Amino acid sequence: MSDTLFPKLPYKLKQRADEATVNIQLQQFVNHATYSKDVARKQAMGGAFGENTDAVRDLAGQIKQHTLDHLDHYLEQFIDNATATGVQVHFARDGEQANQIAVAIAEANKCRLCVKSKSMVTEETHLLPALEAVGCETVETDLGEFILQLDNDAPSHIVTPMIHKDRTAVARAFQRELGAEYTEDAEALAQIARKHLREKYRKADLGISGGNFLVAETGSVVLCTNEGNGRFCTTAPRIHVAFVGIEKLVPRLEHLGVMLKVLARSSTGQPLTCYTHTITGPKREHEHDGPEEVHVVLVDNGRTDVLHEDTREMLRCIRCGACLNSCPVYRKIGGHSYGAVYSGPIGAILTPMLKGLENYTDLPHASSLCGACYEACPVKINIPKYLIQLRRDMVQNHLSGTGDRVTMRLWGESLQHEWSYRIGGWMQKTFARMQAKFGGTLETDDPYASRGWLTWAPGPVKGWTQERDMPTPTAKSFRHWWRKEHGR
Ligand code: SF4
Image (cartoon, rainbow, N blue to C red):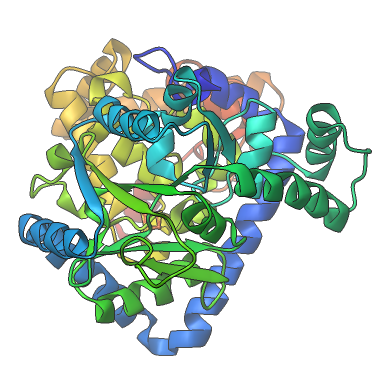
């Protein structure tokens, strides 16, 4: 598993992408799930906000942008207010430090069993192996994450971690790891998981969660889940530790309302997630339930580098997954091809920022720049703009490959002069049409309409013709036709 999200660096995407594109099962699972979620998002956003949809996205984006522009102020406000409710707030510079804090809390409280709800930040810091290393058993409780843990597999989608698996994989995992009878019945499978996890909740002394939002004015951690496991993890054990990225702040509860409205609609097409928990401090004296201690670990882990005003907008992300669902590249290559915790369009810009552009030079190119991600994003992160910005940074920092550099240099030179552009165009056309002629696919009757098909092309076009044929240019160009018709 660790190799899937934490591959050897520098990471090259090609091998996994090649494998994914010929994996018919993966194509079916990912395509079906992302397509239906994309449709559900459009219907939910359009149904709720109608012609104001864009204005609501603007507002959500502005709330996040304002918070990021004044992050120091809101962080201090959050720390003061959370501390006043009895929460112990910690700050972690990087993943290792965040894990050390959690391990120290577990050891100080002699925790032996940890139940964890879904959290991308803990994936980022690789928390569970750190807890296991000090003898604290860990159990994922989000159903998808639980199955992945049984399979020693890794999440491939921000919201739907086991999007690459189906029910039969779950049945096999439960039979193999839990000794359950093989069944593909969804309800029966849910019951098996429920029975197993209930026992764990009862015995656990440490609960780990993430946090979808932090509210500065109340010092609250807000969790949005659909399975209720978040509530068990944050209330049943004696100790609750929340790992939250520093960018998850919103100023006030009224802002939280806006974010909740767009989060669920954008991720699953629901008006609201089934459970929305607002955790404000540990158990009070007169209360029977709830943890004795609540710790919030504010995780930086590269985020302050992204906070630079040129890239700050990326931190607006509320991890709804809408950009993944709408992306034709993600649908084709799946989440594991990105070689990092964050996949899809947001991963293609965030991962190089958090883990070094030199380590992920393929990711800014893992996009057709169609703009579907920008249209889907509820906080209006201009992902295509950042993809281009990262490509420019690669060129400026000499990180692009020699082949790319030479090709672009030649291309640029040929565009400088009309004569070189014409010669280049003529050579391409002649080569392509000759090849099509020898391949027997060329129709020759109309010089302005006749096209052939290339089944093989060299160099950078090779990848295209491996998957589909490529049309050749016509024998006579549009410019030629214009001159002939209009005499100029
Ligand atoms: S970038 Fe936008 S669409 Fe993608 S996960 Fe983040 S908030 Fe959602």
